[in-house]
Image (cartoon, rainbow, N blue to C red; front, side, top):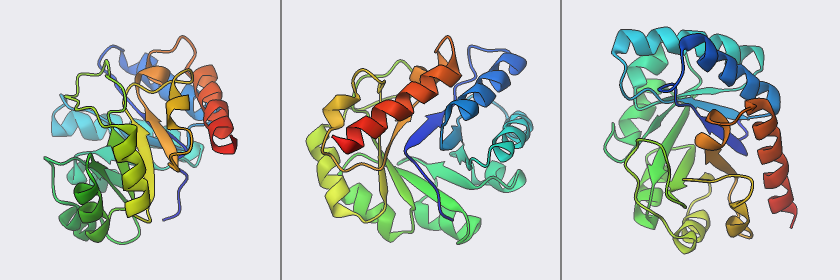
Length: 210
């Protein structure tokens, strides 16, 4: 499946009621995010499926692929466009086998060997970081821009930088050759997610052109 990972938005619903959360997701869609990952670490399987169905209904209206974090079963249950697996989750090769060849499978990589392994097992893209410390509740280990650059050179698939990125600090990624940025707080916690997404798209486009 072809996809654009230039502005990859990862959700965090923990601070919001359902209506506010869904409104923020739709606002981000209007602002120009190109890929959305639904990340729900604390929900039961049934709750995860329920919110995934509602988010998928939104993303489909904007023709934006929905990626489910961690859970292949939830991705299959809602017919999402893809799944993302971390280093402690299901191996990429098994996720690919279960999802099939026409779905997106993404993986987290913090080192060149991890990146190569994920690519060889069938990953379509990599999330690499954290570039900066993050405010999300996910445990983070910082990744240097030097390592990011080496990963970009090592694999032929899309590589996205992640971790504490916003429109004012992505200049550190200039010349890295990445295909996109992944953000959580920069959109999720913004007063206006639509404006935040648009400004991030513009900032990344400028980065690519510089």
